[in-house]
Length: 230
Image 1: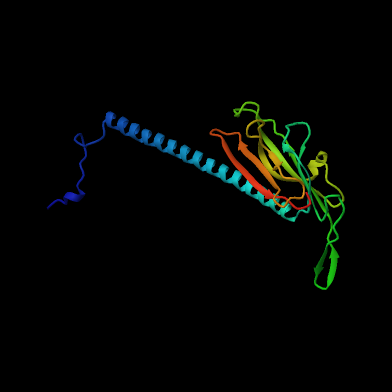
Image 2: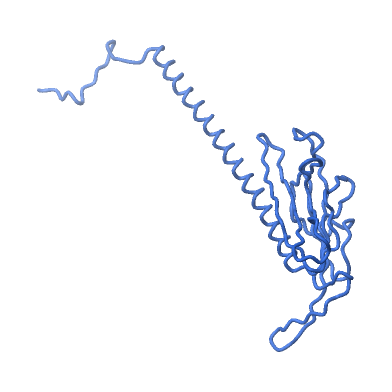
């Protein structure tokens, strides 16, 4: 009877197998592959985390700028602007105060708004932006800078809110970095134009930064047209 060579098996002393050297070599190769894959996974995770951090900082800044731009567009007067923000970790400081439906003397502008067939008088709105300095100085540049600051937006219908009550306001930006010197931040400054000029401008500089390695940060430099009432 003819044997089927595809289904023949050998048993006994002459059966083939792997030597100890071959087994150890295979284990070593598998180990090297595993180490390489783990390194690639860690690198990919770091890149992914860095990308998410950059997107978060950029989105937060964009949202803040939109809020400030909306307030500036609707403002009728700007009361005060800080210039370079001071860094007092015990209490917040005023960055800018502006109002809607109020003139430069503090009087309410009578403005009526039609809603269907009714006319209503628009209320005055007073807005204060406050900066609470952070305390984080680890691995920071330049020396003396601090990160972890916050900017709050406070509103009232009767008077300009005080930054002492910042906790009752809206947190509009965090991870704010404070620097004094050549490039001061946060920085809210009126360009050198006189009160009432149509070309008066508000310049704003802000840096947001995370305490991470490598350092993750985002920067804005925005210019806003001032209302006539300034």
